[in-house]
Amino acid sequence: METATTLAMETSLDSPNPSPSSFNPDDFVVQFWGVRGSIPTPGKSTIRYGGNTSCLEMRVAGKRLIFDGGTGLRMLGDAMMAEMPVEAYMFFTHYHWDHIQGFPLFTPAFVRGNCFHIYGAIPPEGESMKQHFIERILHPNSPVPLKGLQADLRFYELKAGDSMMLDDIKIETGQLNHPNTAMGYRITWNGRSVVYCSDTEHLPDGLDENVLNLSQNADVLIYDAMYTDEEYHSPKSPKIGWGHSTWQEGVKMAQAAGVKRVVIFHHDPTHSDDFLDQIEQEVQAVFPKAIMAREGLILPIGV
Image (cartoon, rainbow, N blue to C red; front, side):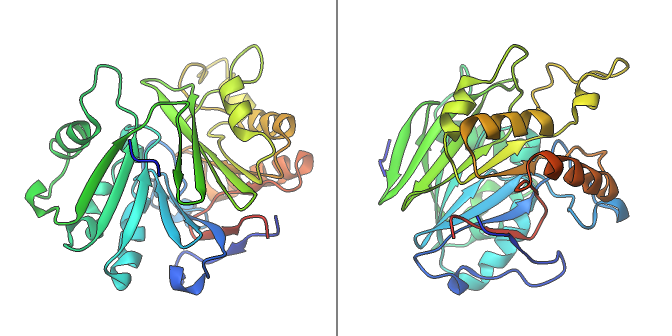
């Protein structure tokens, strides 16, 4: 394997997204391109938070890091087309559809001269990372011929617990509690840290030590809070064992780990803008620096 806060600024969904050139090399910012879980949810009830599935971008010390490739990746790709050629580092938590659906329509991957370093864990009994990504993820699911992938795609295998360096950016990983496995990431640069934990389910008898250790004293924890506690324990339709957590458990984790800010992420497909507004009020009542993830949100880290 190659070794390698203040209040958030928001852009509306229909406004131009800022280009990386508007941030200097000393910046560390996170931009959210897809915040929904399970399946895209376009429609009038999801306009403000967005309906695209998981994809976020970190611009750190002049480098571009992309986490997951849900349908939000298509919009990120459109923005990148004005900046050719590009080099970026892509990290996958796992390979369920809502985290890979955007890659077949990620236009920069079809443009010669671009370079993408693709990192992830091989699933149990899987092949190499390259084989798994090309033959299992793209080949049976992509409507676009794979011969069109003209960018330089380089693949690297990670295991939960591995750490690596990209120059002076440290990237640590940890096991998440999710069906078919998933992996969380901690990105640290210049004394500032962001933790990305999607998809993960809290444990019934205490805090998940993997997530707790990964999150210690982070500036920001982006946490899979797909459900409320009431939904998770619903007598009629419980979500126990489905691989996702609640905002209440996210707050417990953030408090125990000494996290400065928690971002509620991976919104349930049934949660409308109005419902998420209500969750925002409830979570901020107990953790005032909590933020609801929404498309277009730009979050400066440690400013």
